Structures are given as structure tokens and as C-alpha cells.
Length: 79
Image (cartoon, rainbow, N blue to C red; front, top):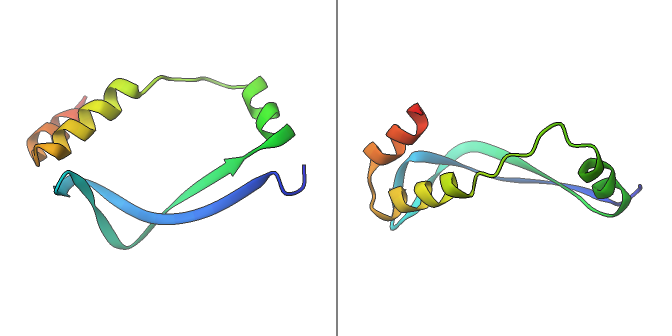
């Protein structure tokens, strides 16, 4: 399993504000992304605790940011 994973730090994003449809980056805050491949990926894919399709939520968040509507984003977060 050696070499089958990677960790990457990305800027954290503010879902409540956007500029030109893109969530604002939060200065000083980072989000971690963890990637797996090979047999490590097969292990996690073969033993999930749960899988949830969030495609619809992602489309609604993109629409809210495209309209620069903090109210739409807030309403989604309150669901």
C-alpha cells in the first residue's frame, strides 16, 4: 500500500459569499483533501460505511453562487 495515498492542503471556502460564482477563499484557513489509489482505494471502496449522492446539493450550491445569493446558500445550510 506504500505510495497509494496523498494528502493535499487547499484553501478553505466560504459557502456564504461568492465572487463571480466562485466561493470566497478564507485566508488563514485550509481544508485537507485525502486521495487514495490502488489496493488502498479498493479496500475503502469495498467496505464503505455509507455512500450518499450529493449531486443535487452540489448543483444547488453552484446555482446559489452563480446568482451571488447568500440567502439561497443560507437556506441550504439550514436544511
